[in-house]
Length: 173
Image (cartoon, rainbow, N blue to C red; front, side, top):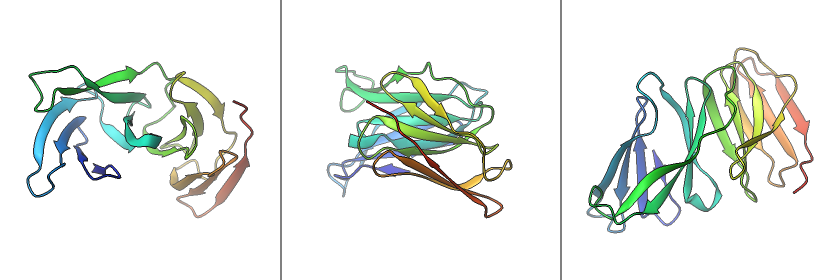
């Protein structure tokens, strides 16, 4: 479940890749605005978050895939508000295992993706580029937490085994 900061949009997602988008401008009477499938039939949705500014969502799949979706005002009759969640970026390189976590930058369109084998990659949303595949992992059996530094200059990962790893990163604009 994702709730945006103003509280006027709630996304309820299921593992099968279905997102139920609610218009909650009137929180006393939420309205189901749209139902959409964001993953193919054979792929489970394993991670979901807003990019900064909360206009785009990042979706991670059980096949290591990443896609970005954005609400486009198409004046659609298929939704109650005319807005349609639209896949705008999907050419990201796949990670070796299911995506388990996505952490977004507080400053830019960068975000980290973590997979079930403990790999952490830094991505850029607009260009669909993998900027860094961080070397090593604290735990090849997966991570329990990942943090993207507030200045985009570090990533901290804690393995399921309790081991931690900190990477300092410098990614010029």
